[in-house]
Image 1 (cartoon, rainbow, N blue to C red):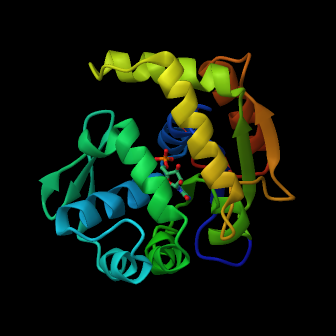
Image 2 (tube, rainbow, N blue to C red; image 1 turned 90 degrees about the vertical axis):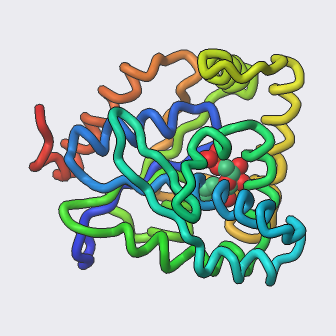
Amino acid sequence: MTGRSAPIITIDGPSGTGKGTLARLITAWLGWHLLDSGALYRVTAQFALARGVALDDADGIAALAAQLPVEFVEGEGDTRVLLESQDVTDLIRSEEAGARASQVAALGPVRAALLDRQHAFAQAPGLVADGRDMGTVVFPAADLKIYLTASVEERARRRYKQLNEKGMGVNLPQLLGDIAERDRRDEQRSISPLKPATDAIILDTTDSDIAAVVLHVKRLVREAGLASGATS
Ligand code: C5P
């Protein structure tokens, strides 16, 4: 632990690397809290859309982000996301919602407005924080930093499978283009760009299934002395 009330593990990387699944499984294993920071950006974009605020209106969206009426409710095996008490979980998971999230995420005032809310997730017994800048900007003193990567083709294939399983019709070449475009925007923005922290452990998941990645990360968590509350 680094002088805070709760230990923190950050998991960053682009979409389709298995970050979300890994974060959920490690959180359950440790019995800690989970911050899905991408959901905050997705909900912010959704709220802007609902309120008719343009996606490039930095101050307008930051004002919405500062008082975002969002709740995360633990369901069976997943977390339901409520915006103004409406369940928007499925709505914010589409590729379009991801693209809108990445647009509002490039706006400095919006990122600043969401900082306190993200810090508030750091509570005992510990936090697993999933995102793009968890280890670099939001929790730079985290106890363990993981950065997941995978080839863009493999990430597109995974996302394609995931969206098809949810009954959301998608086209693979289009998905590949959308993911590459979102990567480009996330990596090239001037504020909090997507990049590994200098002290992050980088894991390439292109050729590994999620079970292997989870085992590897559990080992890293144990080695970091963070697994005292783990279930096995
Ligand atoms: O992780 P997820 O795909 O839900 O994130 C949606 C978008 O939100 C990302 O493409 C990125 O632009 C933005 N994001 C971010 N910083 C984070 C988490 C997400 O900029 N910590």
